[in-house]
Length: 253
Image (cartoon, rainbow, N blue to C red; front, side, top):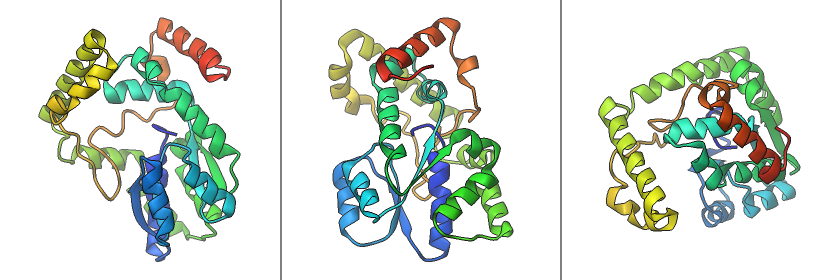
């Protein structure tokens, strides 16, 4: 699930498998076509994705792949999306991010060969989460390796890496804030479709940098806190969100 620790999972899996020569990095997959190409080349890869692509579900069902999925309270997902993109709750809801996230969770949670992890465990008990992953992959790392992974990919360690990345300066953040403000203004005045057509005109303003190895980007982590929606959303927004989750997503708040 997006904004739910999947990059942490990706790095843990990659570190465990790459060290043992069992797989190589495949990075983030955004489309069905790219995923299908990976599936056809015979190379064992560690891939990150958010959508429940059919090729992924087919590979899982056939036993050709294993999946590791993280599930987070959708209210926190909404809050994280708002903070990460400097957007209002209406933007999150209008773009269908929560519906897509819930649909992917529904698909993967019933797929064979999938380990579903609770975001709360990832944050509060990372050692336990690492052991769950290792066991699922039929690996037996020693305590030294587990401790190393906790330190290397811990929340504060990742935040430090992000602060040192290109594009993480105050200037870079200010430019991205300006870009989002312009995009938001255009979205409200001329509509979503016409705004997307104009994106190339200002899309390079305040470009966000991505580390190709870890997939961390220069505004990747907000607080990472559990229950962050309580401080991010107003009472009115919380009521709107919980009504949306009941009526549009189909889950109790």
